[in-house]
Structure formats: C-alpha cells, structure tokens
Image (cartoon, rainbow, N blue to C red; front, side, top):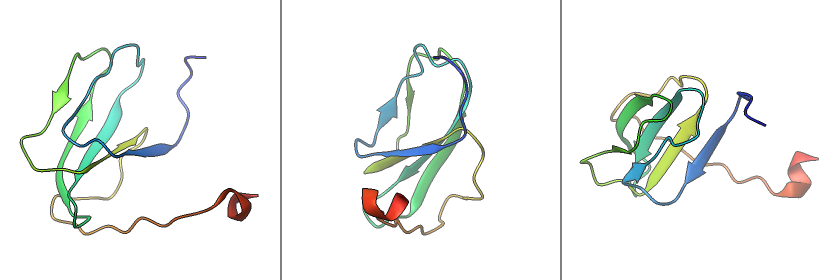
Length: 85
C-alpha cells in the first residue's frame, strides 16, 4: 500500500500541497496558465505544507526528477482510456 511507484500526476489546484502520509520524496513543479514552469522543489515526506509564491494553475508531482527548469514551456498530451489499452 505504501510502496513507492514510478509515475507522475498533474493536479489542477496550484498553490500548495501537503506530504502527510507520503513515505517518499516527490519532485514538485508548479505550472502557470501558459504551461510555463514557474517553480520547482523536492518535497520531503511528512512535511506539512509546501507552497509557492508564484502564480500557478497546475502542480505536477513526480516520483523521479524531470528535466524541467523554471521558465521551461511544457505541453500536456491527452490520452483517453482507449489510447492507453
């Protein structure tokens, strides 16, 4: 149940996250409405709140570091469940 798995998730609420009951570090990337990386941080387990002062619309959480720097432009690709099968 509490094993670390490789992967990433995009959240649509952008300012802060918490790490309660997360047993491994996460790499956090804040992204604005223009899909530009505006902040990044390595979040440690059980840290109460991690926030950014930047104006972010999305939060990308990853179990591994991504090759993203502040100022990079990203693109979200949409895959339906049918495309994944």
